[in-house]
Structure formats: structure tokens, C-alpha cells
Image (tube, rainbow, N blue to C red):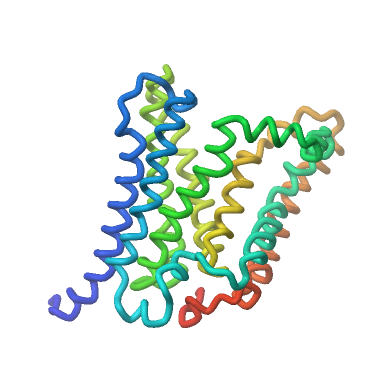
Length: 292
């Protein structure tokens, strides 16, 4: 028989999940409040959505202000809980970024072989990119607003009542589901409903996996900039294209290139915990919680 104490113990969890759900719905809805006939790549659509992201960045922290208990605020400020602090800031940029680059060892190796990496040394490449709204959306605004809303403003709420491991895997579900709004856009652009659903389900899978990684980085580093840097880099690289390996002649060369993809994954798993040691980032925000 359910007692009053049991019901009261469920309330914080129900409240946290409800707050995260509301944030997800409001975030997606903010992108569609504009009456526009253009697709998501049109400059006018991008600019309007930039404004929506700006508004969401302002209102999302309210979920922490009203959702966290007073006991939490006795040990940390709301800015620290949001991952905005100076101690360990530089490390929180460099180490997670390097860790993510290890994961992308295969794609990065292909860029070296193809000579694409030489573009990164060209100032005009960066200048030309920075002049496009799509680059700002993919590399700055989207990673910033999504990590702010779906990690910084959600994970502390979930950590109130769930273990870190559980919270880290619950948090990205809201992030993954939020990407299903692309179904509407794909159908609007002429894609068949079945195909649009398949693509969106695939997108849900890898965005949820990345979301768990981003939540892990936020938890371990205590810095918002850590998942932001990883997110921006992943947006730049895109989903690893294994089919490109098949275009190279010679089975040994293809096997060697494929092994770099596998080696990157193995090395990432090996360095994941050592390179995210909380002591590197002066992180004692969640010192009382342990990953299990």
C-alpha cells in the first residue's frame, strides 16, 4: 500500500521530469511561433530562430531558480550550478575538446589524407564561414542554446532526485525527442512521411547518445563550456561517414582507415574517465554524488 511518505518521495522526481518536459516543449515551440513560408535554411528563418534562442536562454534558468531546493543554494550559487564559473575554465575547454577529437580520430584522419585540414590554416576559410548565418547557427547559437537549456538548466534538476548515472541518461531523452520536430520540416520540403520518420528516428538515436556524453561532461567538469565546445565540434564534423572509406582503393588501405575509426572509439573509452577528473576543473559542485 502506498504511504504518504512514498508519495512525497516521488514528488521531487515528478517535478523535475515535468520541468524538463515543459522546457523541451517551450524550446521547440519557440522555433515555430514565427509565421514563415521559408524553410529552416532561409536567412529570415534563421534570424527569427536566433531571437527565439536568445529568449529561451533568458527564461530557461527559471527552472533552476524555482525547481531547486533551498538546501542546494546553500552550497552553490545559481551561476555555479549553471556551469558559469572561472576555476578550471580553460581546462574545461581544452580537455573535453581533445577527448572529442580522439573519438573522431577516423574522420580527422580522412581530412588529413584528403588535404581538407589545410583549410583550417587559411584565415579566409574562417572569415568566409563567419559571414554565413548557417555557420553561426551550427557552430555557436544552436550548441549554446541547446546545451544551456538541455544540460545546464535540466541536469541539476534531475540530480536532485536521481543518481548521476540515471540523470545522465534521462537528460538526453528530452534532447533527442526535441529533434523530432524536424519531421515536420522534412515533410514540408517534400520528403515522404515514412522516410522522414526513419531519418528522425536515426537522428534521435545519435542525438540521445551525444546528449548523454554532453551531460557526462557537464557533470564531471561542472562547466557549461565543456559540452558547448564538444557540441560545436561535433556539429562541425557531422556524423562519421564510414562509406567514404569504401571509396579508397586497396583492401589493406580500407582496413587501415577503418581501424582508425575503431581505435578512436577504444581510445575515447579509455581516456573518458581520466580526462574528465573533477579535480582538473576544480569541480566540487557534485562532490557528494558518485557515478555508479
